[in-house]
Amino acid sequence: MVNQRTFDALRVFAEERKWQQFHSPSNLAKSISIEAAELLELFQWSDDADRGEVADELADVLHYCIALARVMDFDLDDILLSKLEKTRLKYPVEHTRGRIAPIE
Image (tube, rainbow, N blue to C red; front, top):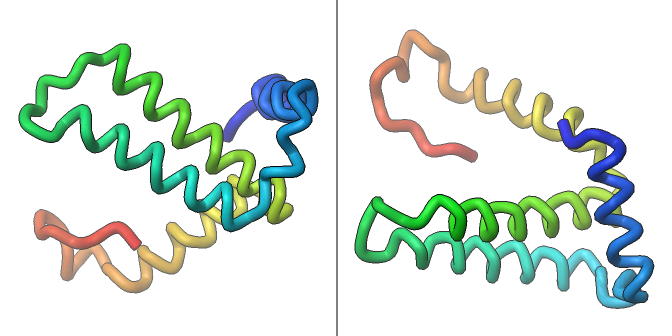
């Protein structure tokens, strides 16, 4: 999903600043929520959010998600594909095609 070069760059960024000490699972989960709220704020009154600002906030969310996956020793591809399979079983296409179904 994220290539090794990007994964390593994010790790080195945190190591250079000695930020790993703050990267507990709970701190990272909080940071994901905070950054997601900042992303949502861009769309608060309009669907016409600035693409650059959206990209920056989305990058922040992804950065914290990747950091949490690293701290928890999750393989992103594995957990995403596993969840997709669970969701596929929960929402079979014959019952959900064209209908709103939540992402879980």
